[in-house]
Amino acid sequence: MRLTTKGRFAVTAMLDVALHGGSAPVTLATISGRQKISLSYLEQLFGKLRRHGLVDSVRGPGGGYRLARDSAAISVADVIAAVDAPIDATPRGGEDHCTDDRCMPTHRLWAGLDAHILGYLQSVTLADLVRRSDEAGTTAIHASPREGGAHAEKMGGDAHPREPAAAV
Amino acid sequence: MRLTTKGRFAVTAMLDVALHGGSAPVTLATISGRQKISLSYLEQLFGKLRRHGLVDSVRGPGGGYRLARDSAAISVADVIAAVDAPIDATPRGGEDHCTDDRCMPTHRLWAGLDAHILGYLQSVTLADLVRRSDEAGTTAIHASPREGGAHAEKMGGDAHPREPAAAV
DNA sequence: CGCATACCTGACCGGATTAGTCAGGTCAGG
DNA sequence: CCTGACCTGACTAATCCGGTCAGGTATGCG
Image 1 (tube, rainbow over the protein chains, first blue to last red):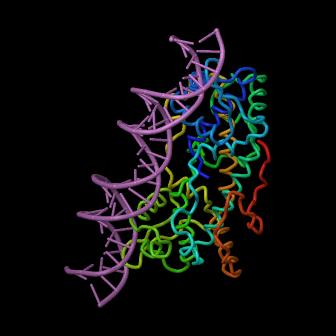
Image 2 (image 1 turned 135 degrees about the vertical axis):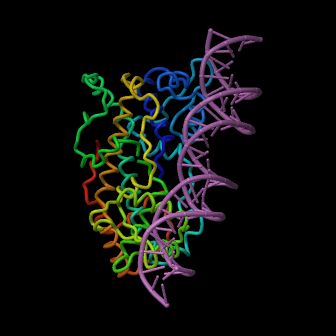
């Protein structure tokens, strides 16, 4: 599972739909304006999201996209998996070069890491993000837009002073 | 922090040095032969690893690379951060478009996710991989590398030193 | 000394991916 | 019918990935 900006765009857009899709479907143009994402790029992404059954499309005037399931039933992992290339791991060979025991430890490391990250992404749903967005709206957040750790610091912390909580 | 095959190569190579670097330095040609990684590509990777102080180089005949610190003091996160591009997130603008509260929830999501994954990668050291490699050597493992969508649960033992916070 | 070894540097390259554009369709409501 | 919106596909510039090539530079050893 690759973590790229493409999945980030998709999750952002899906969150927008979950937030503003109460009554009417949300149009891509609206998302484009709100989230500053290219309209044509959104069309690509939502094409994949629709084909993966994560959103329903409503054509014609007044149309747009709405979530196919409840926001609590859509995980971040679903969105990223839908939008990222469905390429299989170990594309080339993969059977004979792994009979050797040397690639084993790293292979198991990556498998474990992958499962770890995947489990985390699967545990976070769009509903969680909506709820988090709500509490962010209630509490004053204009204090300092600096990227500081206003967020809970339960994580083991930033051991990289050089890199300010960059992308994954 | 992006997760790409580049970091995977680097960790694999570093693990090789940790495993076979007992007495003499390990030459890149040896790693290239063992791990089937291009020699020139290894030179690029180890150039970055050296500049980041993760390995020491010994020039001349009989030279090679050895770990700059103890294997228990080098985490997977260190290796990946060293080898991956140090590009900063939010390259363009980044201050005015985030005053709006709409990009906040996703921003906090990615920050939390990043911290989560980073914490996991930082908790795994090369020494851990060496130890895991040893037990892999004792127990015969020749299972089929086939693994479908349902992520394998064959990760015996504790691959999670840090407790995974269910929800951020 | 001289030379082989091995690190070191930088340019270059083909392919893949990213982010985005453009030009057209197709469906549905007013 | 006409307009809003989805839908499709081709195309592009930029970037990254994995790798190659051509040269350096330092060092041990005969």
